[in-house]
Length: 98
Image (cartoon, rainbow, N blue to C red; front, side):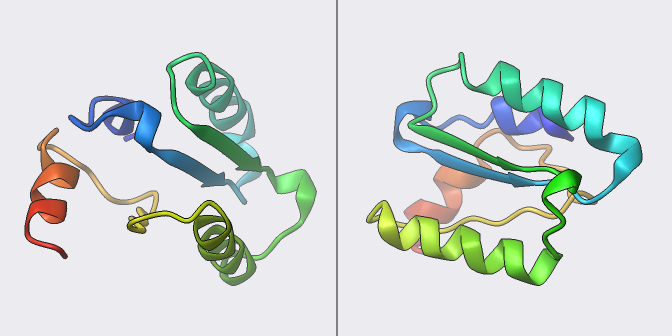
């Protein structure tokens, strides 16, 4: 799933990523992936790790607050179980104002 976010057909310089991991087993994978994201040209990348001890509901609220602070045009949230098989998903949703 993680790699599919990088494959989204949308300008990375227009995207702020907020990643929250609360699974200890996934910490090494998630932190390594986030470190790689920072070099791919995203406008910003914010990572909340399991060691930050932040509950999912609080992390979601923080993501919305960051979006508002960054004056974002839209908010797109993806849970870990989701599979984005179409790289144009984000562009299609935005074109329909969803």
